[in-house]
Length: 419
Image (tube, rainbow, N blue to C red; front, side, top):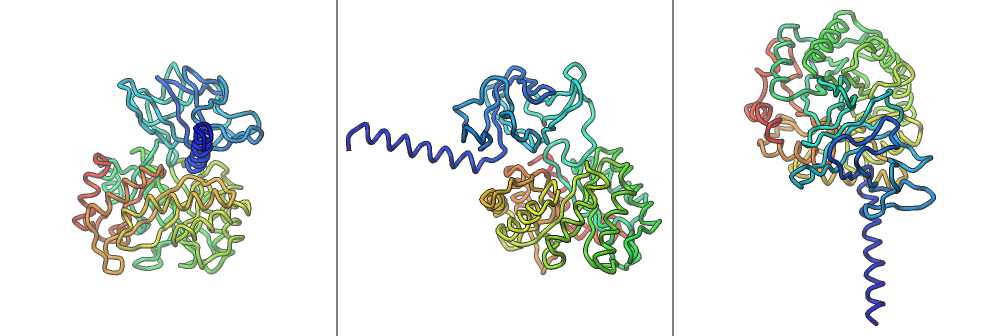
C-alpha cells in the first residue's frame, strides 16, 4: 500500500481505540483547573474547560478528550447532568491526581459551587466566599471512605459502642459501618424488628443513639435488612423497610440496604418494590440491595433492577470468595461495569460492602490481602470499602476491638494512612 493508505488505516485504528477507551471510561471527566471549577448552574466553567470521556451527545456522537464540547458547557443541552463523577486535577507542581467520586447535583442551591481544591483534596460543595469547614453528613459525601462490619450493634451497650466508634473515627474509619437491623445473633432478641416488620423499642433506641454518636464523629452507618431472620415473609419485609425509613429519616448519616445478598431470596420485582418503597418515603436516602456472585451475575442483577425502575443509588456486589479475592477486585469491578454498559445501563457507583474475612470457611488472610482489596477498591473508584470481620457479630460481651484478629487490628491501625 501507499504511504497515505497506511496513514489512513493508522488514523482509523487510532479512532477505534479512542472510542473504545471512551466507553470503558464511563463517567470519568478530566479538567485543567487551578481551583474552583463548576458554577451553580453546572453550565459555566470557572477558569477551566471540562472534557468528557463518554458518549453523551446523542446528536453528535462521541466527544473525546481532544474535542472539547465548546466553551462553558458541562454537558450538552438535553442530557442528564446529575451523577457520580471523578475529575483529573492538574496540580501546581505539574502532576495530575484523580479526585472523587462526588455526586454532581443537577440543581445546586443558589451560590453553591462544586469546588476542586488545588492541593488534590476531595471535592466538595460550598460557597466560593465561605467554603464549608465541616464534611458532608451523608454517606459517600466526602470521597472514598472506609468502614467495618458492626452487625450486632443492637445487642451492644452505649458505653462500648461509643468507645468503638471513637476509636474507629480516630483511625480514619468513618464508615459506612454496616449495622444489621434484624441481626439475630446470638439470639433473635438482638433484632430491632418484630416478625411483622414493626420496630422494637429497645433496638430503635440503640440505632438512634448510634446514628447520633456517629454524626458527632463525622461517621456514617449502613442499616442493612436481611430476608427471613425474624421476619415472617415479604409483606413483613416491606413493612420493615417502610418503618425503618420513616423512623430514622431525620438522620442524614445512613444508607439503606433493603436486603442482604438478595440472590435466591427475592425476585427482581420484589427488590424493586422494597427499594422504591423506601424512596417514596425519603427520596434523598441512598438505597442499595446487595447481591453475591461473580461479575457477570452481579451485573445481570443490577441491570435488571435498574431497567425495571428500581431506584438504587449504589451497587453493592459481594464477589465470590476465593484465594485471589484481594488482587482480583479491580478486574471484577471493571467487568461488572462493562457488562452493565453493554446491557444499556449506566452503572451506579460501586460500594465494596462485603469482601472476604478471616474465619469464613476456615480462611486466614494476610494484611496484604486486605490492603490489595482496599487499594483496588479505591483505584477502581468505588465509593467505599468495608473491612468485613466477625468482630462485630456478637457484641453482648466483648467490644468490637477486643474481638479483632491480630491482622485485622493491623489493617485498622494503618490502612487509612497507607491507602
